[in-house]
Length: 231
Length: 231
DNA sequence: TCATCGTATGGTACGTCGTACGAGTCAATC
DNA sequence: GATTGACTCGTACGACGTACCATACGATGA
Image 1: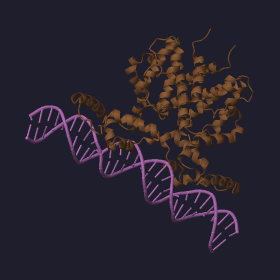
Image 2: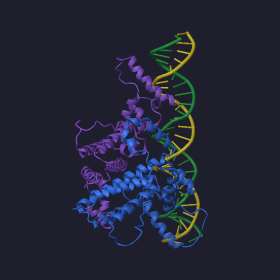
Image 3: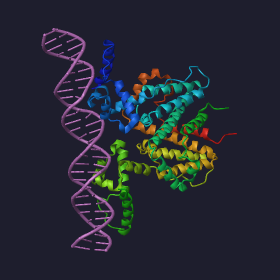
């Protein structure tokens, strides 16, 4: 039922306060947090298809159906795992810097890095409702751009453009990562048919490996375009 | 086996030449093309999870395992369906226009439109090897940018930037489309927590519905940034 | 002290999936 | 008439998400 989840959450909080220090048992009890953490581990190691409720229960030393006390269903679990991976700790220094561009670049590179640390996360993000961590990131981004002088009327477009760029870049990068073994196969396949695509070949589009650098450079171009109009 | 597929392909070609005009039977025989076409229909109607080999066979009036004569496996089928949807017919007029920017915009909007016509396609594209139709599109895009004066050294970044932008925009748009019923639920959820995200709310980031306009405007900004440096 | 109740666990079972295997049909060839 | 290759498909297997239900246990109220 719907009551299940919230019930579990509130009960746990009370429990921990009532029995503060006790059993350091070998197998800690199930909890929403433990489930999510382990799910992320599993996703990192095995990929999206590698996460199954049975495997997850195995790893937790529990029965499969016990998971459903703490989690609505597998979709719900994906939402939780995804948001748990998107926390943002903020820019290195707290100063209200006048370097808005540096701040934006830092935020977006951190966002990208967070997703690449968990390659399953990028492709999951667009098709789910935005969790609190993602909303915070977007709010901070909006605020920075706004402070930088982007008009309210352009803010919408600016943010979506950056979102699109980061998501596209990261999803693509994460996907190419997965197919690592067929990398050489793809390369020689490409060289085989490359006379049909001479410009692609000349630009070394599919052979370049400097993903980070390309990301940064392209982001620079986009920010150039988004910058408050130069006289 | 590996021989299966290529064998099937060559055999069919020969067959059709040997018995040119004959049975307009009620149930046409299976063929790779018919399978792919029907798979696309199914995907359009039911989404990615809606495509199962059994449903596909049902719709084709065949046994499930017959499909595997023409198609290696479900992954293979996805590749074929995806590329079949990405054909490009070229710009409206054949002229070698000097309006490179208009050409690029046309190509990218057509690309986006093709994917949105089949909302399952966008999120599939980044994680698979590029098929011939996608490679053609990229080659044409490269050529146009190159003709427009983008240096070979920048071509790589330029194309990836556009790719990222289009993919991010389209994947996001297509995903929002799927969750149509919970649209209003999401909206009121957002309004409920929007005091925590005032800038997001002010920009109407998640409430705006003019996807096409936002796409076009943002693309304009990106092209501004990518344009061969102004004097 | 005992009954009740909410929290939590997990075994069994159902329906669905992709696809391996191998038996079958049928037309063309020798 | 036997053989061969292209093609079809029924059966079966192991894996999946999860509904349903029995169970256990600590806290509460009588």
